[in-house]
Amino acid sequence: MTRYQAGDFAAATRLIELISPRLYRFFLAQYASRPMADDLLQETWLRIHRVRHTYRPAEPVLPWFYAIARHVRVDHFRKVSRLAAREQGLESLNQLAAASPRSDAFVEILAALPESQREVLQMLKVAGMSLEEVARATSSTVGSVKQKVHRAYKKLRERMGSRSAAGKGGERPT
Image (tube, rainbow, N blue to C red; front, side, top):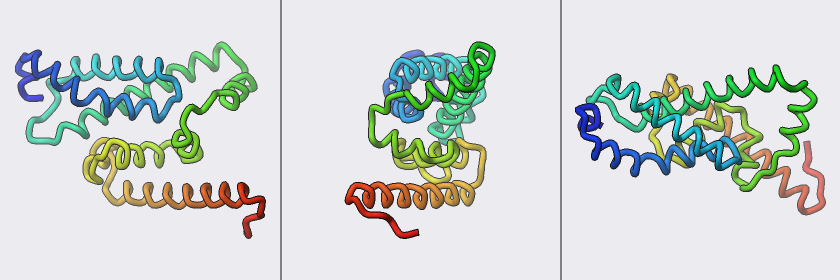
């Protein structure tokens, strides 16, 4: 990253080769649409290029990349939400959300989690980031990250338990 900041575009190419698959999986886990993940990845690299001077070489680079990717995703969500609110009624949006196909069981299970828990879980387990890196990327504390992950695991266990009970035909005790 330091070489990229200094203008070495071979270093930029190597960074793109190394980091793009991780960022792509990050976006793909959020959206079942590959074209959307492609667009967000491209927008992330454009933004990284524009703000590369803000990276501090003493800091880990992966949380810096994920923080930018997270902001790109949030900006995109806000933009789409504003456009959709102007163009469609809320009933149409609910129907679209209910009809959108889930291509992966993992994405479907994670969809039950709140956005903040899903995001932290993906960074930790899919991207392989450390607690400290996730905390840096999400602008929160390590304790907050641990709490979100704990709550996500609890919710996933409950969801998976109810699925297996439903699959056996039995009722789960409440």
